Length: 90
Length: 324
Image 1: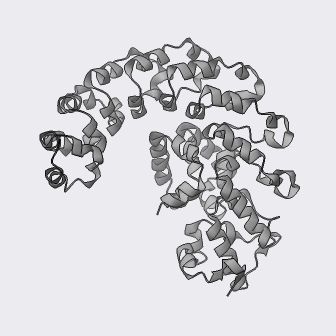
Image 2: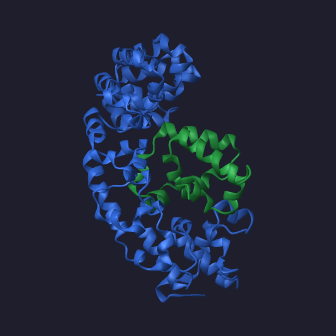
Image 3: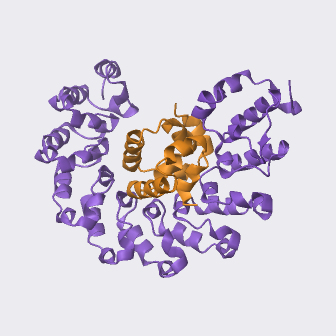
């Protein structure tokens, strides 16, 4: 479940206000299509992922899937720090 | 003035339509809106939200009747923020010739309803969009801003400097010219350790937050230097400080990662206490035990740890700094 109070305590208000609903919707649909089964965790801990413009998000996933042999989402589930790579192209 | 009881009974099957504002409207208006046949159609259902009460019956009906909604290319525009516009303006916006130009097509999303026709026209007609470096900014986030701000932002001389060009991303529109200038002029960017933070994610933060975070004492300690990533702008300072303090309290500060800072400090400490109580090492193979950075789903499925239960069962006596 998405923990609203936690999110308000954790993330800067300016971050939460900056999330574009339409962009977030597209990314959520994409995550479901990719069969990511930890979307709630992403919302609770990595809501800033939704700040990435959708088209840019797809490009970053393609790059990361090349790096992780198509297993980015599986590996990120085991090691959450990989989600930082999605955010900041570390 | 609407009769609250009658309006409540009209809305008994529509709890999401209740708001303070609806009680200021006439009962007849509420009844007429709810009776519109359009709500049977899937494509119009997202429009039936409490924002509808700010419009009037004739405008609502005229907007719903528009032939444009039969075209698939306009259906993603059917969201409840449309009620901030009248039918004539909605039509004028949809008929704008600029939507035929490829570079502007991504802008035609429901976010556009936050702007009026004249503003949209002025923005789309800006000569600046002929400059390729600014075309990357043409996304629907632009409707969060306004013509004057957009013009002032694009005029900034900083965009001529190579080090600032990667910051030209659509997130810019969440900020304003004054704030952007203050941020780019910060003397902290001259320090090598902070340059890695100069990414487009800073536009979601304000100047004060950025200053506060860059001046946390931890960044002078090489132990924490690896935590200097743009994530620090996303998480509240309070969380950053608490999680580092918890790590220091249990002697694991040299092992925490940036994702550790995203943990709720209560859950982070509860997990540490759980591991200690069950004689599970906090450090494994010279790394933080993966349990401490695991996502909630993984904690439950792989490690059978439920953070909510830990919070309830916790017998850690915080005030005495010890646990039972």
